[in-house]
Length: 500
Image (cartoon, rainbow, N blue to C red; front, side):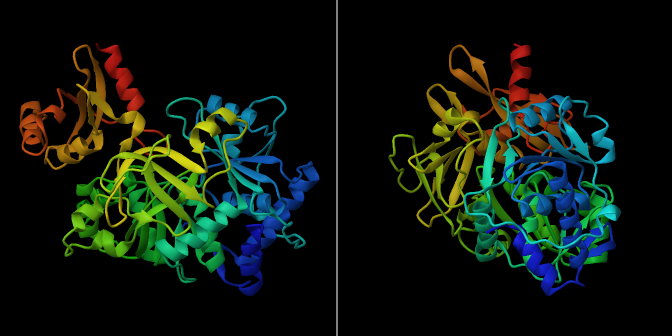
């Protein structure tokens, strides 16, 4: 089934329902939305785009981004969303790797692209208002819909092949496991639409909700709170760093989150102290999902009632987990030899099911390493308890081995964040001739507090084993992060190498 059918059906059933918003202003109904999709599709076909061709979308968040999704899908082509904050060299590499010669871009970003054999078109909402309607072409479960390039923090990004069937399965799993969506909701695109926020448009199109793009095109705390109060019943996808920023802004400005209905957080570790503080400020609006581009948004879920629970005996243990397996997948802890860990034992998180990618684009070697006997090796180290809840300890590459013992940075980060002087922290390993590696903590100090390593060391000794505590504490004004808010531990390790 072609994903664009869901938009066509909603437009036929509810043509006059408000669909697209720029800020708090409605600019189009679902009929307008569908006609714009048909118009862009007609343009792409006239340009020579055919079924299976890759079409890049290189824009800041805007209504035309959504039109591009469904126009490309409607004709059986493949969308290649590119984050607007990437360097032009990174953009060029993706275009070349994807064999992509056609780019949909906005006026500002298109001026930066000066590449041979690349055609650039800037779609504008007002120019896409009128077109003959044409139904989506037929697509199978395995037909490619989205070529998603990983963030590439450890090397060149890989193109994850995401099919129509995978995205449909993700959407249906969302309704079964994550949250319900109602036509009175408004989904707010404050995170990059080239990532999870864009993927999450699909279930909101099916439900016929409103789609709002901030005038800023991105994440601005004051703008988000204002839009929530005006539009009401806001749903948004957010990285953990965004949740923390919303919480800090709300506390500073006495905001309680009026107008928010659901905030789904994913994309990195949410520290226990941060989510406790967020729930105290906003109430039960948070849901956690765990996924990867290779299994988009669909590995595990921790529903809102458990994120907000403070009465159950295991509430804190649950809140430190990433929840339990979603309906469409199987999850286990094991290793490449096929052995399965017992409850509570640590190993690599593995996932199997209809949501798992068929492989990486033009990269058989990487595919063979990532998928073994049908199981996706996530590269995440974790454990599953006797009740089926998955706790993610760290990425396998981030684990520190000191004196033959495995040390998980997240455990130490959680402890350090309990101290009032610590605003942010990232723990990495540093080469040590005697122990192999030693633990180093990079600390962003809370405003109004001093950076006192000896106090932090004493704090760690109160909570964790002596061999796990950092051997060095380094004060830093801000942690290096990629465009999606993930801390670049590779940069921190490089910092240590240069200062040995």
